[in-house]
Length: 377
Image 1: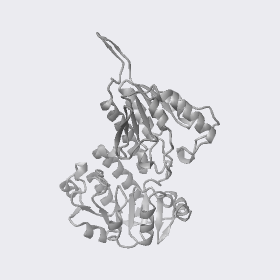
Image 2: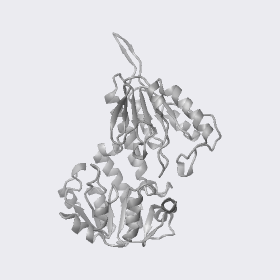
Image 3: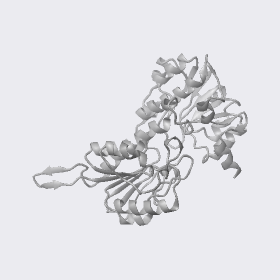
Image 4: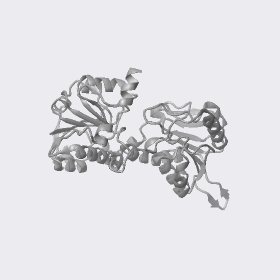
């Protein structure tokens, strides 16, 4: 089986879908691995390292894609790349299938089998394939460091001869993987941390990291969705939520927002009126900018200032740490791929939960029900 790892050449993506380490594992599974020249350059993996791991280096993207049985990427292939791929080949990458509909339709029309790392089910068996969590962990960590480097105040409490310096106040909105890592990192830097989440069940995790959990009093199932994700909340809950966040955000030096509902626009948590209530010099790190942002003023991949408040809309924070981001993502992809490969061939058991739920196109059909419904709506 010909496995291709092309170079990421869209939107300045620095990550790569396979490292020399995972190439060895893929070869052990019976695959022949072909890597486009300089595919790992932005993640600091050289062609020689891939060669030493047993991969073949290919200079031509056309040659690589046209012969591939399976292609692994970070971002979905461009329309131009899709035209070079032979029918019935399989592609594994990130893809928000209910939002990237043009890609899904092109995959269907080319009879390509698509697997999205966004769709991998959150089950114990699939845990090592959970790329969303591995990349969110990095985003939560790095967002705090970026904010700290821009702040005009210290993060920790300091006792100096000139007087006492109060600790910075950090508010984290959303206590999923990214939020919990942001809390842990901010606490390590000595900040005073508060966190909000629509799911009361995360209170214990937040408090175990030393942060204060702030919550809206509501029903137990409010905001709790399948697989540990958040879900849409009621209008009354949203009204109470807005008031609670407003009360705390006006005192914060740093606000880190991480609230995302899979395949949906990011929920609006911070309207302009809240930003206006914040202190000049404070910072919003919007980790939901890829899906529109949790802040009304967020601009994807831009950093703006509004009335002295800095709003960072960087959408690919994991890409700022390409070595570890690539290592983790590559392990997630390799775990999914080797799970599907039997005796060197791709075995697509559609009765298998992990395979069927991760798949969104196959044999000229859209197989992911929510994506199909979005297209026909």
